[in-house]
Amino acid sequence: MVYSHRTLKHVIMPLADKAMGTSLTKYWKEIPKMNTWSSDEIVKWQDDKFCRLVKEAYEYTVYYRRVMDEIGIVPSDIKGTRDIKLFPVLKKPMVREQYDNLISKRAFKKEA
Image 1 (spheres, rainbow, N blue to C red):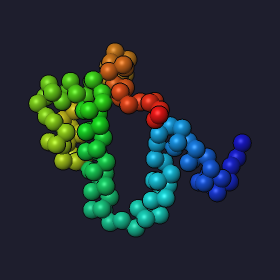
Image 2 (image 1 turned 45 degrees about the vertical axis):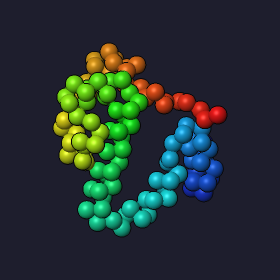
Image 3 (image 1 turned 180 degrees about the vertical axis):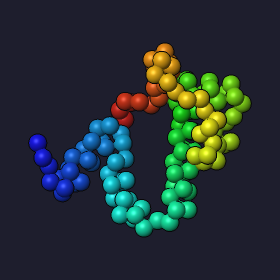
Image 4 (image 1 turned 90 degrees about the horizontal axis):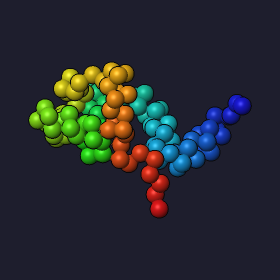
């Protein structure tokens, strides 16, 4: 089934956001603005998103809390994407082994 751009933007994506607790519609609206950003603005946005992701992972996943505690860092130590090198590379066997510990405690929770 093929949807029009308007149907996708104003109906499908907002419903999907609501059902899954995502923010795709917000980003869809930001894309035209993002296309005008300088390289520095893009890097800042990426760094901010990465820092928020690390904080969320630390707060809501067993695996990343354990990894960060073991290497002696806290989310506030992470300043941007350049710090990704501090984290171990996840390989398929590790994901299989640690699957339950990698899922956020907030995943799939519906708001009451």
